Length: 270
Ligand code: ATR
Image (cartoon, rainbow, N blue to C red):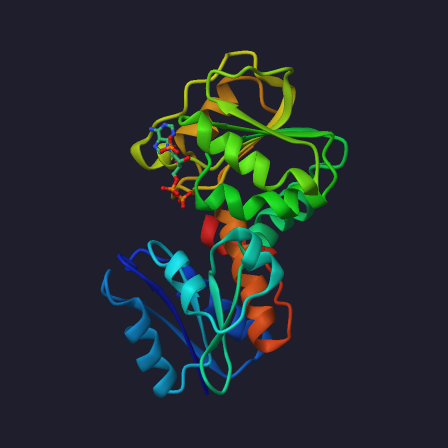
C-alpha cells in the first residue's frame, strides 16, 4: 500500500484526502492518503522524516508551496515557472517537485466549463503565488490578451514582465488602465477569504462573459462568484473544479493513471 499525504498548516479543512480516496476507489489503486500538519517553521525536516517512513508522494498546500519548491531535488518546467511546488514525487534520495495547479485551472476552464480561451481577452486579479502558477498554462492556451490587475500595481507589472516572452501579457493596478471589456475574469486574490471582491469598474466584464474564482466555497458562492452573477456573467464559478483537477493531475504523476473527475466533483458539490 503506497502512502501519500497533503501537507499544510492548517490542513484540517482540506478536501484532498476525500478526493484521492475517491480516485483510489475508482481506479483500484492500492494507496492511502491522509492530511498532515507540518510546523510552520519546520517543513523540510517534516518531509524528510516522511521520506524515511517511505511516503511515495505528497501534495503541498498553504503556506508551504515555496518551501516545497526549495526542498525539491529537481523540478518540472511548470514548477520552475510557477516558483512553487504543490506535488512531490518520491525519488530514492528525496522528492521531485511539480506543480499541477495551473493544469488543474485549465482543465476546469476548458473541459468542465467549456470556455474558449484561444483568442479571448482575459483579466487576472492578483499577483501572488496562485496567479503566477496560472500564467504559463493560460498564455499557452493562446488568449488575444492577458491582463493582470493587482492591488499593488508594481507586482502585476513585474509579473507581466517575467512572462512577456510567453505571450501578450500586461499588468496594472486594480484601477487600470483597462483597454477593453474582458471575456473571462479570473480572481486569484486572497480577498475572497475575507468575503471581499477587489474593486472593479462595473462594466469590465463583457455581457455573457465568464467569472472564475480560484477559491471555493461550500455552497459554490464566493463573493466574487456573486459579483459575476450581479454583473451579467454567463458563467460564474468557484474553484472547486480546479481543486479536483489539480488533484487528478497529481494522481496521474504518482500512479500513471488519469482518474475521472466529473463524479468526484458532483459528490463534493452535493
Ligand atoms: P497566494 O499565494 O495564495 O496567491 P499571496 O501570494 O499572499 O497568496 O497573494 C495574495 C494576493 O491577493 C495578492 O495579489 C494580494 O495583493 P497585494 O499584492 O497588493 O498584497 C491580493 N489581495 C489580498 N487581499 C486583498 C484584498 N482585500 N483586495 C485585493 N487584493 C487582495
